[in-house]
Length: 333
Image (cartoon, rainbow, N blue to C red):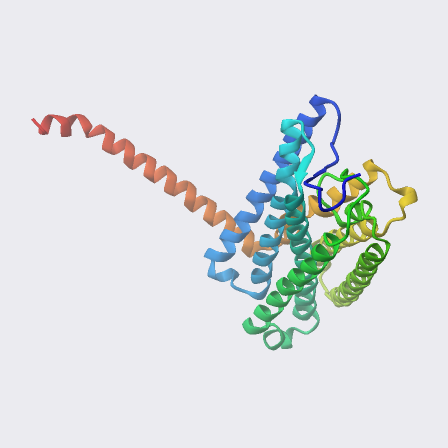
C-alpha cells in the first residue's frame, strides 16, 4: 500500500459503471450547476445594482450567494469531468485544495444562515432595536466574522487531515474529497483520534448554532401568531417554514454524514447524504430566500427587462445602420 509520501492521486467514487448512466449524471449535474449559477448570479447583480436592496438582509443574501457559488464550483465541476471522460482520479494537491475550499464555503454558509436567522428574529421580535443591532458596521463585522471563522475552521481541518500518514490505499468512497473518507486511509491512530475529536467538537458547535436557530424561529412563530390577519399569518409561515426546512436538512445531513457509524455506511447512502448537503443548498437557497422577497423579485424583473430591452434596442440600431450601408457605399464614390 502506498504511504502519504508516495501518494500522488486519489480515486473518487464513480456514479455508475455504465457509460449511459455516467453521461446522465453529467447532464444532471450540468443542469443543477447552471441553475445554481444563474440564480445566484441574478441575486448578486440585483443586490449590487438596486439601492433599495442595500439592507442588512440584502447584504447577507449577497454573501450567501457567494458561498453558494463557491460550494457548487468546488465539487461539481470535477464530478462532471470524471463522468464525462470516464475517469475517477484527482491529484493529491487537487484533493487538498478541493477539501479546503469546500469546508471553507460550507462552514461560512452555515454561519451566514445563522446570522440571517438572527436578522429575522430582530426584525420581527425587536423591530425598535433593528437599526441599532443591525447597523451597517455591525452587519459588516458579522459577515467578516463568518468568513474568517470558516477560513480558520477549514485551514485547521485541512492541515490536520493531510498531515496524517495515509497507508490504506487511495480509493475514496465519495465523489469529492471529504474528511471522513480520507481518515479511513490513515494509519496513524493518534492523528485519526485527534481529527475525530475536532469533528465532534465542530459538530457540537454546529448543533449549538442550530439550537439558536430553532429558538429564534420559535420566537418568530410566537410573534407571528399575534398577527390579527389570517392572510398575514399564512404569509409569514409560508416564508419562514421553508427557511427552517432548508437549515434542518443542511445541518442534519452534514452532521450525520460526518458522524454516522461505519456499520451503516454504504456508497449509495454516502452519495445521497453528500448531495443533500453539498449540491442542493446552492440551488434551493436562492429560491427559498427570494421567493417571498418582493423587492428582490422586482429588482430581478427590472434588471432582466432592462437587459432585454437594451439588447432589442442595440439590435434595432444595428439593423438601421445596415439599411444605410448601400447609400454609404455609393457616397464613397
